Image (cartoon, rainbow, N blue to C red; front, side, top):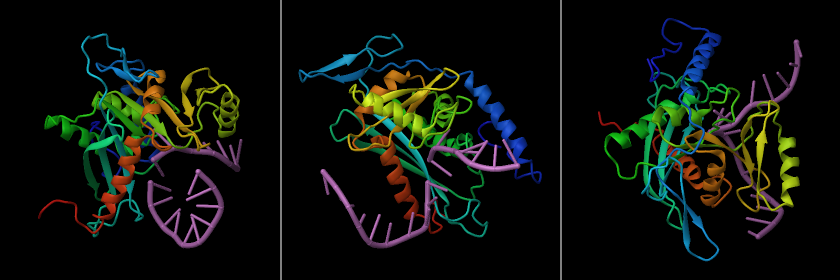
Length: 294
DNA sequence: GCGACAG
DNA sequence: ATCTTGTCGC
């Protein structure tokens, strides 16, 4: 039984993949009722001003006296080349979830916290549009651990390696994590998930058109008329965009502002660090050592 | 039927 | 996501 009170197909022989997906869909629909797509946070957003001073932008939530946004988390999961569901005989880790926290008030975006969790005997497959059921449990565990111990670096906002609203049913991994952890979240995709008529060529054309207007991002509107997210060139040199979408409790325009201020390279730094460090940690522990003393 | 399909 | 060498460029 997992975090959703859901038993997925491994016990009782085989529940058909179709049946599993139906149950996953139901969970997504249920959690979606708790989704908040507007600014809803106590902190304030720093705005770099041309005069050199740091102005402060009013955040959502209305409550006065909020602190500045300082701690931004990034999460990712890396996998080893070995097959999923590593042989029972092998104690080798087959995946590694990571949670890092960056202090975004420092010019270098210093990493102030990192934690990892290794996966063993992992058998949840990757199925497009159901990424959350593969990656959310281990990431939630890392967040929960921080919260339970009252860690002072607990993130005020989470950047997720995966989409939010930019999803076939409007509820990607970033929404899933945001809702279950009840934390403001932003989804970041490195590739376009073809949804509601969106295509790379279409995105390219719109970006080039906007190119002259000085803007470095375009809003993505599906054929149905819904705003699903934005495509942006996070670095001057990169023509390949990243895809930003609402995860939870952060409006799209706010998400874009935030992402812009934490990109040293194409991939926003919190996610980039989570990615690099999880892969590194997995390699250094892919010999059967899960960190637990026996 | 065929292609597409976040990580 | 992972496999995988060199290579072109700032």
